Length: 348
Image (cartoon, rainbow, N blue to C red; front, side, top):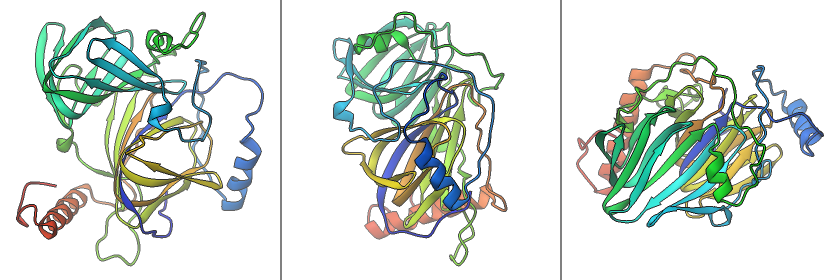
């Protein structure tokens, strides 16, 4: 997709979750006609694909951001809580663990990504332990037994389950009797080795938009670090200052959570402010028009789930090596201007 006109913006980090699962057949959603008007007006085109139908109880309205404080919170164990947001194909939990708290052992029925936002913990996977710290990620598959013990300063992390974990929805007061959240395996090979902790900073940036004409550097203004499993796809996206992601559509559902900073989230012909302080979460059904604008140093973490297949690739004409070098140089320059470290400081 091509970038839209530049816009001044502010710092942001988002977690997006493209859900590759369709809803069950039924009455036409209220937004369909308005969405079609936007598609016709802007001549928007997108991919199509056949998706299995999945139906789970939901608390998020289509295309309307919700602050974290309004989301369900469950207590998993003493000192371990989780704030829940979910679509039809995946569940995103922000897990908060107090110092030295223990997440009890569980046998997974879903695939799981853990992405550490702050703090530290020791994770046990099938009797093997590993340390987790900020910016670490680990991918786990169904059938494994995992437990965690937080470090001295506790831990905050995002956990992404796919399919949706129904027992946690029940703990959040949702009726799950007779609900089946499963869907067929899509035959996708995961990008990460199960049970192996990785540093997100070691995952290469992938350009998502074409380079902007007239700028002093030839690279995309939007980049992503991509992870994916059999069902879930995670995309950690970075948006340059005064840039935006243009209107686009795709057949997969998308769930976005603002983690840090602020952004203007476009949904069809409307715009909503979102912030990391409020922790907005937004459910976007497949086929709905969306865009992101007014981002400054926007870091968008995308997590996708459902029958995965939306694997993004480099934008046409872009060069990944030069992109990563350019981003590191830009980060070092900004760090130096802030006086936090020398121009040749650690890798950005």
